[in-house]
Length: 336
Image (cartoon, rainbow, N blue to C red):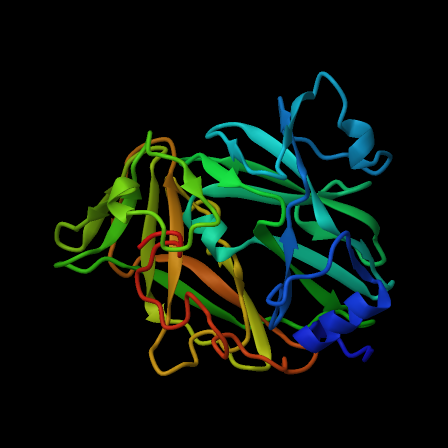
């Protein structure tokens, strides 16, 4: 495997699987490896927790999963409902035996973020969520907290993805960024606000849910929208997003103090996103915080941080079936 720095492409990820650096308790799904990431699959058991936690440098996750932190265990092999407002921890089918020059970062998949399911990946002896240090050997776990909709999940479902990076000996150069702002048109559909107390979302049912059962369509007044506290919104970027074949990108808030709202992103943009026949927008997942807040059309809200690929992937985003290529304002693929 090349030691050139950068985000690892699909071909190198497949080599890591073959070499055992990425292990799995069952054969990988045919579409599990993406252009610049690998999806992570739920195992057969979920633990209902009293509180979130990090194991810290001196403990494994399994050593921490004891009473009274664990309230009960749930069998996912035949499917189970994870309730809104509850915290669950699920061992993942995939584990890692990383070389000393490779680290990893996890993020929710796009569909997960768009249904307001908060997820974080943790590993043994770690003091950080979603960050796996270079050379890590051990299992992976995912923390799941449905915020608005209760969800029906099964063993093998994929809520998060992992991006791997070969590290350079020298300091990483400054990364390119692109500011992302909100699109709030003066007429027509501007976004969606999630309805509380809706039914259960079955994650296996693609286009299997009526969006009006779960979402309230929104229009704006003179290009402005007031965010209500603790409500969840789906909005779109004003800018077209285009990720070159030799780059990957991650969405990050433009600042932590830009307003009374929280921007919750799925995060990863694969090489080739937005390079199809139709332009692609970024979908923004926003939750109001303590007080109502007025958003205006064109308001800067986030930034794209670009990072070079180690090499171009064999398959670019959108080459096969990609639910969000060419998207505008678009809900999760679970809705028709």
